[in-house]
Length: 310
Image 1: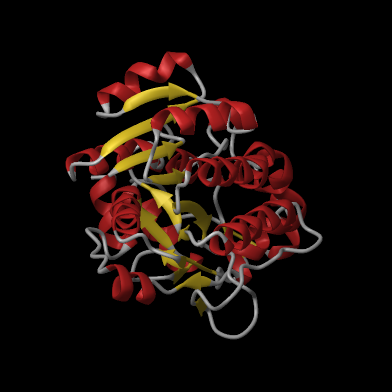
Image 2: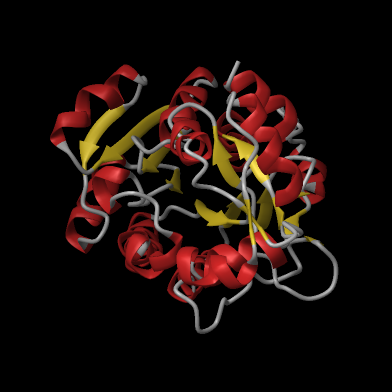
Protein backbone atom coordinates (compact mmCIF):
# COMPACT_ATOMS: atom_id res chain seq x y z
CA UNK A 1 0.00 0.00 0.00
CA UNK A 2 0.95 3.64 -0.35
CA UNK A 3 1.33 4.83 3.24
CA UNK A 4 1.67 8.46 4.32
CA UNK A 5 3.35 8.79 7.73
CA UNK A 6 2.91 12.26 9.21
CA UNK A 7 5.74 12.59 11.72
CA UNK A 8 8.23 10.16 10.23
CA UNK A 9 11.27 11.34 12.20
CA UNK A 10 9.87 11.11 15.74
CA UNK A 11 10.97 8.33 18.08
CA UNK A 12 8.16 6.07 16.87
CA UNK A 13 8.29 7.17 13.24
CA UNK A 14 11.94 6.13 13.03
CA UNK A 15 10.98 2.59 14.09
CA UNK A 16 7.71 2.47 12.12
CA UNK A 17 8.88 3.55 8.67
CA UNK A 18 11.46 0.74 8.25
CA UNK A 19 8.90 -1.87 9.36
CA UNK A 20 6.40 -0.62 6.79
CA UNK A 21 9.07 -0.63 4.08
CA UNK A 22 10.15 -4.15 5.05
CA UNK A 23 6.55 -5.31 4.59
CA UNK A 24 6.58 -4.02 1.01
CA UNK A 25 4.68 -0.78 1.48
CA UNK A 26 5.52 2.41 -0.44
CA UNK A 27 6.03 5.03 2.26
CA UNK A 28 6.03 8.81 2.17
CA UNK A 29 7.11 10.26 5.51
CA UNK A 30 7.09 13.86 6.67
CA UNK A 31 9.48 15.95 8.70
CA UNK A 32 9.30 19.58 9.79
CA UNK A 33 12.95 20.21 8.90
CA UNK A 34 14.72 20.05 5.55
CA UNK A 35 17.81 18.96 7.50
CA UNK A 36 16.06 15.63 8.24
CA UNK A 37 15.11 14.76 4.66
CA UNK A 38 18.19 12.56 4.38
CA UNK A 39 17.23 10.67 7.54
CA UNK A 40 13.81 9.86 6.11
CA UNK A 41 15.39 8.61 2.90
CA UNK A 42 17.80 6.43 4.90
CA UNK A 43 14.74 4.83 6.54
CA UNK A 44 13.56 3.83 3.07
CA UNK A 45 10.79 6.38 2.53
CA UNK A 46 10.16 9.27 0.20
CA UNK A 47 10.71 12.42 2.26
CA UNK A 48 8.67 15.60 2.36
CA UNK A 49 8.79 18.71 4.54
CA UNK A 50 5.36 19.47 6.01
CA UNK A 51 3.98 21.82 8.63
CA UNK A 52 1.27 19.86 10.42
CA UNK A 53 -0.34 23.07 11.69
CA UNK A 54 -0.69 24.55 8.19
CA UNK A 55 -3.76 23.23 6.37
CA UNK A 56 -2.34 24.14 2.96
CA UNK A 57 0.98 22.42 3.65
CA UNK A 58 -0.82 19.28 4.83
CA UNK A 59 -3.24 19.27 1.92
CA UNK A 60 -0.49 19.66 -0.67
CA UNK A 61 1.72 16.96 0.87
CA UNK A 62 -1.10 14.41 1.05
CA UNK A 63 -2.37 15.20 -2.45
CA UNK A 64 1.10 14.75 -3.93
CA UNK A 65 1.69 11.44 -2.13
CA UNK A 66 -1.69 9.96 -3.20
CA UNK A 67 -1.74 7.58 -0.22
CA UNK A 68 -4.11 4.74 0.50
CA UNK A 69 -3.63 5.20 4.24
CA UNK A 70 -2.58 8.10 6.47
CA UNK A 71 -0.75 7.46 9.75
CA UNK A 72 -0.73 10.40 12.20
CA UNK A 73 2.37 10.31 14.44
CA UNK A 74 2.96 14.06 14.76
CA UNK A 75 4.10 15.28 18.18
CA UNK A 76 6.30 18.09 19.47
CA UNK A 77 7.61 16.74 22.76
CA UNK A 78 11.27 16.28 21.85
CA UNK A 79 13.77 18.43 23.73
CA UNK A 80 14.39 20.36 20.51
CA UNK A 81 10.72 21.34 20.25
CA UNK A 82 9.53 21.50 23.86
CA UNK A 83 12.56 21.62 26.12
CA UNK A 84 13.19 19.16 28.94
CA UNK A 85 10.27 17.05 30.23
CA UNK A 86 8.28 19.04 32.79
CA UNK A 87 5.25 17.35 34.30
CA UNK A 88 4.74 20.22 36.74
CA UNK A 89 4.02 22.50 33.78
CA UNK A 90 2.61 19.86 31.44
CA UNK A 91 0.33 22.37 29.74
CA UNK A 92 3.40 24.25 28.53
CA UNK A 93 5.51 21.16 27.79
CA UNK A 94 2.75 19.63 25.66
CA UNK A 95 1.45 22.84 24.08
CA UNK A 96 2.80 22.07 20.60
CA UNK A 97 1.71 18.44 20.75
CA UNK A 98 -1.76 19.44 21.89
CA UNK A 99 -2.12 21.64 18.80
CA UNK A 100 -0.92 18.81 16.56
CA UNK A 101 -3.49 16.49 18.17
CA UNK A 102 -6.30 18.98 17.59
CA UNK A 103 -5.56 21.26 14.64
CA UNK A 104 -3.10 18.83 13.06
CA UNK A 105 -5.54 15.93 13.27
CA UNK A 106 -8.27 18.04 11.70
CA UNK A 107 -5.96 19.09 8.85
CA UNK A 108 -4.99 15.47 8.12
CA UNK A 109 -8.62 14.30 8.20
CA UNK A 110 -9.60 17.11 5.83
CA UNK A 111 -6.79 16.10 3.47
CA UNK A 112 -7.91 12.48 3.72
CA UNK A 113 -11.46 13.43 2.79
CA UNK A 114 -10.25 15.61 -0.10
CA UNK A 115 -8.18 12.78 -1.56
CA UNK A 116 -10.57 9.91 -0.87
CA UNK A 117 -8.45 8.24 1.82
CA UNK A 118 -10.63 6.16 4.13
CA UNK A 119 -7.90 4.29 6.04
CA UNK A 120 -6.59 6.48 8.88
CA UNK A 121 -4.50 5.54 11.94
CA UNK A 122 -3.69 8.04 14.69
CA UNK A 123 -1.59 8.16 17.84
CA UNK A 124 -3.36 8.18 21.20
CA UNK A 125 -2.05 7.74 24.74
CA UNK A 126 -2.59 5.09 27.42
CA UNK A 127 0.12 4.98 30.06
CA UNK A 128 -1.06 6.06 33.54
CA UNK A 129 -4.04 8.16 32.47
CA UNK A 130 -6.92 5.72 32.78
CA UNK A 131 -10.00 7.04 34.53
CA UNK A 132 -9.36 7.01 38.31
CA UNK A 133 -12.29 4.93 39.47
CA UNK A 134 -12.77 1.19 39.83
CA UNK A 135 -9.90 -1.20 39.13
CA UNK A 136 -6.27 -0.44 38.33
CA UNK A 137 -6.33 -1.71 34.71
CA UNK A 138 -8.58 -0.21 32.03
CA UNK A 139 -9.92 -1.39 28.66
CA UNK A 140 -10.86 0.54 25.54
CA UNK A 141 -14.36 0.94 26.97
CA UNK A 142 -12.92 3.18 29.67
CA UNK A 143 -12.25 6.86 28.93
CA UNK A 144 -8.96 8.56 29.62
CA UNK A 145 -8.88 10.65 32.78
CA UNK A 146 -9.74 14.29 31.92
CA UNK A 147 -7.35 15.45 34.69
CA UNK A 148 -9.68 18.38 35.29
CA UNK A 149 -8.07 21.39 36.90
CA UNK A 150 -4.48 20.17 36.45
CA UNK A 151 -1.78 21.10 33.90
CA UNK A 152 -2.52 17.78 32.15
CA UNK A 153 -6.10 18.77 31.32
CA UNK A 154 -5.29 20.38 27.91
CA UNK A 155 -3.36 17.27 26.92
CA UNK A 156 -6.14 14.89 27.91
CA UNK A 157 -8.63 17.09 26.05
CA UNK A 158 -6.43 16.85 22.95
CA UNK A 159 -6.18 13.05 23.26
CA UNK A 160 -9.96 12.93 23.60
CA UNK A 161 -10.31 15.01 20.45
CA UNK A 162 -8.18 12.56 18.47
CA UNK A 163 -10.31 9.62 19.65
CA UNK A 164 -13.56 11.44 18.91
CA UNK A 165 -12.90 12.70 15.39
CA UNK A 166 -10.81 9.78 14.11
CA UNK A 167 -13.27 7.12 15.26
CA UNK A 168 -16.17 9.12 13.78
CA UNK A 169 -14.24 9.24 10.49
CA UNK A 170 -13.93 5.45 10.49
CA UNK A 171 -10.29 5.29 11.50
CA UNK A 172 -8.27 3.72 14.31
CA UNK A 173 -6.69 5.36 17.36
CA UNK A 174 -3.80 3.49 18.94
CA UNK A 175 -3.48 4.38 22.60
CA UNK A 176 0.25 3.81 23.07
CA UNK A 177 1.69 3.20 26.51
CA UNK A 178 4.77 4.98 27.88
CA UNK A 179 7.45 4.57 25.20
CA UNK A 180 10.89 3.16 25.86
CA UNK A 181 13.51 1.95 23.41
CA UNK A 182 15.99 3.61 21.02
CA UNK A 183 15.70 7.37 21.30
CA UNK A 184 13.29 7.24 24.25
CA UNK A 185 15.07 5.35 27.03
CA UNK A 186 17.85 7.88 27.67
CA UNK A 187 15.44 10.69 28.55
CA UNK A 188 13.77 8.33 31.02
CA UNK A 189 16.94 6.99 32.61
CA UNK A 190 18.87 10.24 33.03
CA UNK A 191 16.78 11.58 35.96
CA UNK A 192 16.67 8.09 37.50
CA UNK A 193 20.46 7.93 37.56
CA UNK A 194 20.57 11.39 39.14
CA UNK A 195 18.00 10.27 41.75
CA UNK A 196 15.65 12.98 40.51
CA UNK A 197 12.79 10.52 39.90
CA UNK A 198 11.55 9.41 43.33
CA UNK A 199 8.74 7.08 44.31
CA UNK A 200 5.96 9.35 45.55
CA UNK A 201 3.93 8.24 48.55
CA UNK A 202 3.34 4.50 48.43
CA UNK A 203 3.92 4.40 44.66
CA UNK A 204 0.66 2.52 44.15
CA UNK A 205 -0.25 4.27 40.89
CA UNK A 206 -0.17 1.99 37.85
CA UNK A 207 1.49 2.59 34.48
CA UNK A 208 1.55 0.72 31.17
CA UNK A 209 4.65 0.55 28.99
CA UNK A 210 5.40 -0.38 25.39
CA UNK A 211 8.67 -0.81 23.54
CA UNK A 212 8.90 1.33 20.40
CA UNK A 213 9.38 -1.72 18.17
CA UNK A 214 6.21 -3.31 19.55
CA UNK A 215 4.31 -0.05 19.11
CA UNK A 216 5.50 0.07 15.52
CA UNK A 217 4.51 -3.54 14.79
CA UNK A 218 1.01 -2.90 16.16
CA UNK A 219 0.74 0.15 13.92
CA UNK A 220 1.71 -1.88 10.86
CA UNK A 221 -1.05 -4.38 11.67
CA UNK A 222 -3.59 -1.58 12.10
CA UNK A 223 -2.58 -0.17 8.70
CA UNK A 224 -2.73 -3.50 6.89
CA UNK A 225 -6.01 -4.59 8.47
CA UNK A 226 -7.68 -1.19 8.01
CA UNK A 227 -8.49 -1.25 11.70
CA UNK A 228 -11.30 0.84 13.14
CA UNK A 229 -11.91 2.01 16.69
CA UNK A 230 -9.67 2.40 19.73
CA UNK A 231 -6.89 -0.01 20.72
CA UNK A 232 -4.66 0.00 23.80
CA UNK A 233 -1.10 -0.65 22.58
CA UNK A 234 0.67 -1.59 25.80
CA UNK A 235 2.62 -4.55 27.11
CA UNK A 236 1.25 -7.45 29.17
CA UNK A 237 2.23 -6.12 32.59
CA UNK A 238 0.72 -2.87 33.85
CA UNK A 239 2.48 -2.22 37.13
CA UNK A 240 2.65 0.23 40.04
CA UNK A 241 5.48 2.73 40.33
CA UNK A 242 6.84 1.00 43.43
CA UNK A 243 7.67 -1.98 41.19
CA UNK A 244 8.80 -0.60 37.83
CA UNK A 245 10.82 2.40 39.08
CA UNK A 246 13.21 0.50 41.42
CA UNK A 247 13.62 -2.17 38.72
CA UNK A 248 14.47 0.48 36.11
CA UNK A 249 17.02 2.01 38.48
CA UNK A 250 18.62 -1.40 39.06
CA UNK A 251 18.84 -2.06 35.31
CA UNK A 252 20.45 1.35 34.83
CA UNK A 253 23.01 0.69 37.54
CA UNK A 254 21.59 3.53 39.61
CA UNK A 255 20.96 3.79 43.33
CA UNK A 256 17.52 2.83 44.55
CA UNK A 257 15.05 5.73 44.03
CA UNK A 258 14.28 7.91 47.00
CA UNK A 259 10.80 7.97 48.50
CA UNK A 260 9.09 11.32 48.90
CA UNK A 261 5.80 11.91 50.76
CA UNK A 262 2.93 13.27 48.69
CA UNK A 263 2.77 16.52 50.67
CA UNK A 264 6.37 17.29 49.72
CA UNK A 265 6.16 16.04 46.13
CA UNK A 266 3.12 18.15 45.29
CA UNK A 267 4.87 21.58 45.43
CA UNK A 268 8.11 20.17 44.02
CA UNK A 269 6.92 17.94 41.16
CA UNK A 270 3.33 19.08 40.71
CA UNK A 271 -0.12 17.57 40.87
CA UNK A 272 0.24 15.47 37.69
CA UNK A 273 3.33 13.62 38.89
CA UNK A 274 1.71 12.91 42.25
CA UNK A 275 -1.44 11.59 40.55
CA UNK A 276 0.56 9.38 38.19
CA UNK A 277 2.61 7.91 41.04
CA UNK A 278 -0.20 7.36 43.52
CA UNK A 279 -3.47 6.99 41.58
CA UNK A 280 -2.54 6.20 37.97
CA UNK A 281 -4.45 3.50 36.10
CA UNK A 282 -2.83 1.17 33.57
CA UNK A 283 -4.37 -0.49 30.52
CA UNK A 284 -5.14 -3.92 29.08
CA UNK A 285 -3.90 -4.98 25.63
CA UNK A 286 -6.34 -7.90 25.24
CA UNK A 287 -8.31 -6.28 22.40
CA UNK A 288 -5.23 -5.50 20.29
CA UNK A 289 -3.89 -9.02 20.72
CA UNK A 290 -7.28 -10.55 19.92
CA UNK A 291 -8.41 -8.38 17.01
CA UNK A 292 -5.10 -7.42 15.39
CA UNK A 293 -3.24 -10.64 16.13
CA UNK A 294 -0.52 -8.55 17.73
CA UNK A 295 2.42 -10.44 19.22
CA UNK A 296 4.88 -8.56 21.40
CA UNK A 297 8.62 -8.95 21.21
CA UNK A 298 8.80 -7.40 24.69
CA UNK A 299 5.74 -8.66 26.59
CA UNK A 300 7.02 -7.11 29.84
CA UNK A 301 8.92 -3.95 30.70
CA UNK A 302 11.06 -6.21 32.91
CA UNK A 303 12.57 -7.90 29.87
CA UNK A 304 12.64 -4.68 27.84
CA UNK A 305 14.33 -2.48 30.44
CA UNK A 306 16.95 -5.16 31.06
CA UNK A 307 17.78 -5.58 27.38
CA UNK A 308 17.77 -1.86 26.58
CA UNK A 309 20.10 -1.06 29.47
CA UNK A 310 22.36 -4.12 29.26
